[in-house]
Image 1 (cartoon, rainbow, N blue to C red):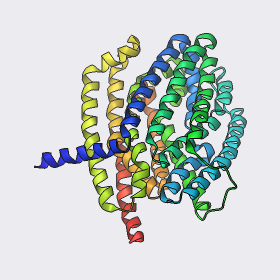
Image 2 (cartoon, helix red, strand yellow):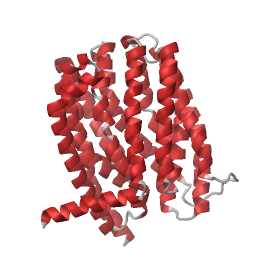
Image 3 (cartoon, one colour):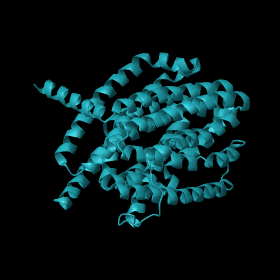
Image 4 (cartoon, rainbow, N blue to C red):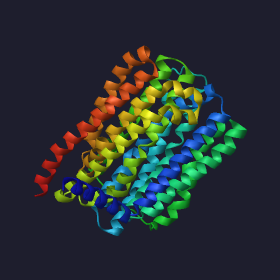
Length: 427
């Protein structure tokens, strides 16, 4: 009987996911991740390892800043529009975010360029790459708000197609441009791809351009929520790239940066699995966030599904880790144990962090996500300063794996506390 109830929960959860065009998001994301792996392989073939390591080093600096593009207004757009049922108001919120987000993004780019002159880069050309890559903030912001509006319109089909088109453009450009321009082609590809994808899909939003009307929700709290949500994403993103930055700083070997980047590529790419479900369902469960029965059932179904998925992936990585790494390059087989440790780590995100971090955002507690990520970041730096010199890139993997579980469980505890308080206010 108990097994039947578990099976029923999972089947109902998947069925609801499919009813919201989740299958489109799922398959588009899988294809996009495969194309991303292909693009990474292409870059590895056409670009010298040391040169690629320097580009990746600079790119990872920009990567952890990208979530703050537009000062987090894309995050505010999703939550506040989801809570607003008026179509005209949603249109107005989008225009407000577009205008103010563009100005904010340009300001961030200027700040990055200014700060770059005071950073003691240990790799030649790292500053130049960082300056050029900082311009990625504007096209990334545009792409994010276009995709956010598609989700708000419950148009998950076009949301899925937007990611697929982005990946196709990326693979085509990186193949052509890196062949002729080496690492310069890689940088141009990163800059141009989100812009082209945004221009194609923005017309599908059917936004009516008009004078922006001041709505009650377009206030300090609107900016505050987005700012903390973006800070949380920045720190979370930094948790993924801090290992690469510290490996480059402590070991001072660009090739080891490349090795760790590619060993962690598959585990981190698999994070698309919980993200697919959350991206498909976020607007829906935000609209129903104060329906405690709905949220309780959603949590049970999600956790059961991803517990099973995590167990399967851990078993596969244990028995077939060497073979999987050999598909990228035979020299990566030396780091099979590091790969397995990373797979255990991402299971903590599968089961806990991906779900409860987003539920905290749904109830307006993006600041709690920020504080959790900040604590994890501090622990990451302290731990890596000890483990990387002693164990190399395996030390970085151990730190990341432990913190993925730590932040997930802390998110669960935090959500339970703040959700009870939020329900009391509503009741």
